[in-house]
Length: 475
Ligand SMILES: CC(C)[C@H](C(=O)O)[C@@H](O)C(=O)O
Ligand code: SF4
Image (cartoon, rainbow, N blue to C red; front, side):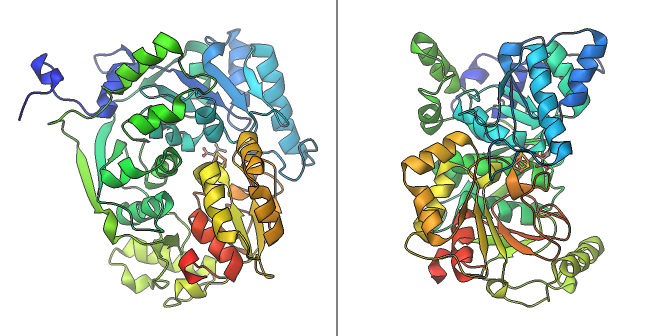
C-alpha cells in the first residue's frame, strides 16, 4: 500500500470527520471537551427565543452576524403567507423577527424569496459548504453533512453560546462508516435506503458517532438524495452524518449566492478534494450494506426503525427476539391500528404528505410529479404538496409541477415544515392515517392520534393515486 500524503508527512491516516473536526479545534487538551469554531449558525423560531434572552440579560452581542442566519419554518401557515391564526405560533414568529432586528441577524421571513425550512435554505443559498462546521437548534441539522461538513443539532443554551462566541465545546465523538456497495435498483431511492439502514441499526444504533456514508450507491446519489440520507442520521441516534464531497458537491454549490468566487473558488475546490477518509484510517464501527438487495421501504410502527419492505407484511410482536422490541412493537401496532400479517400494500391511507426537510426538495417534487402526471389522487385521499422552501416552490412552478399536482387533485401549498410536525395548522385528526415523506412517525407527531407511515416521494405519489401504500410499479 502506498503511503497517503498524511502518512508521508508523519501524520496518522484520518477519517473525513476527523479532518474537519481537527480543522476547527480552537482549544484542546486536559479533561476539557474540545472547543470548536463554528462556520455557520442557522436559526429558527422554535429554539432561539431563550438564547436571545440570555444574550440580552448578559449584555452581549451576536459575535458573528455574518455567519448567522434565520428563517421561519415550523410555525408558518402553508395556505397563505401572512395570517398566522394561532397566537402561540404568531408570538414565536414575531419574537424571532424582533430578536433578529435587535441583534442584527439576517432573517428570511414569510413572503421572502429565501424563506423555507432551515435545512433546505442553507444549501440552497450556498451557505452550506464542504469542510464546515454547521449548527442549528434543530436535530435535523445533520442534513448539511451531505456536503462533507460536520453538522449537528444543538440545544437552546448551546445556541446562546454560539451566538455569543461563535464556538462550541464538544466532547470527542466516535466515528462510524456505513458502506453501501453496488447500485440501488431502479425505483429504490435515498429514502428507502436510509429507512432500511435505521431498521437494521435501531433508533439508538448510531449513538455518540459521527457517521460517514460511503460506497458506490452513496456516490451515485444526487445531492438531494445525499441530504435525505444525512437528514435521517439523527433518527438512528447518530450525532451527525457526512458524505465526502466530490464533483457533484462542487457542481451543486457553484454559482450559488454564497459560493466562493474566482480564485477563492479554485482554492476552495482544491481544499475540498482533500476532504476524504485516508486509506488505512480506522473507524470505531462499520456497517456494510449491499444496495442491490434493497427495495421500496416503508414504516409500519411509531419510530423510524420500525420499517419493512413495501412488499412485506406488518410484523407480529413475536417476530422480535428482544423483549423490549417485542413490547414496543405491540404498543406500536395498537397505536397504528394494524393487524400483524397484513400486507403493507393493503393499508389504506387518508392523507399523503409530500414535503419536509427530508423530501421537500425540487428533485422530490419532480419524482412525485412524474408518477402523478396524467393520473388522479384517489377520492378517499387528501394529498398535500408542500415545497421545502419558497425557491423550491418557485422552481417547481417554473417547471409546471404545480399544475401536475393541482390537475391530479392535490393541494399545492406554500413552503414550511407543515405536516412534518404538529406545530402549525397542517395536522392529522385523531385516527387519520398518512403516508408521509417526512422523517418521524412518533405518536402524535403529525397531529394528536394521527398515524404516520414514512415513505419515499415515489411511494407517496403512487399511494395518493391508489389510496393504499403502493409504489409506481403498482400503477
Ligand atoms: C422543533 C425542533 C426543535 C425539532 C428538531 O429538533 O428536530 C423539529 O424540527 C423536529 O423535526 O422535530
Ligand atoms: S421539516 Fe420537519 S424535520 Fe425538518 S426542521 Fe421542520 S419539523 Fe423538523
